[in-house]
Length: 226
Image (cartoon, rainbow, N blue to C red; front, side, top):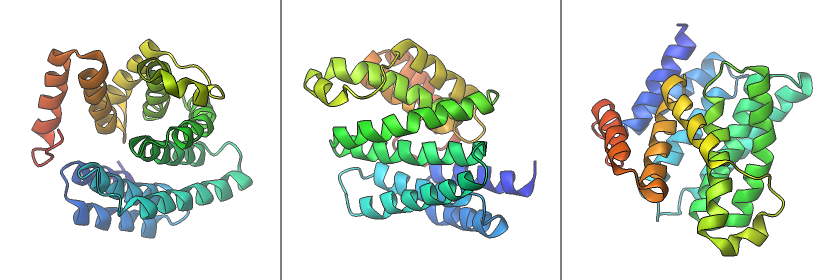
């Protein structure tokens, strides 16, 4: 593995073990190593995402997080103007929109969340068509497919807001998240954590929740959410 990939993976592990300052050092190093690549800035935003996640009622970091992802999207757009098939620019733009949608969903801004998902979905589908071996991309499609199927049934009053988004497929979403959790280069932990939440809150398969939780906490003992 090259040093860029090695530092990226080390930084990601540090995020999940809640070692935020050390993770930021790694991701700033990525930006310095390759300022034209969106990964470093995207992962810096993920540090803020996890700061938000461990204290979800504190909204003081929301604006900074959304703004950081806007910056990643702008960088990806610049890369796509030069090459419309730049798979990493497509991937990180889709991921940035997806994470903006996740925060908006947590803040009960369902229309904004659905709109972010609507814009992210064709991007991650394009990225997967260009690079079908990249299991990280399945995190985004898996989340979308699952929630676009489940949310309208769990919250019927949301249905009129979601008329403009493509239909989901719960079974396919679970399969995509499972594959991302097994094979993802960068997204395997996020996919496993997502699966754990889905199995707990919606599917209620608690033996599977326990299995995922034990796997995650074994690797990241400092993470109270795991």
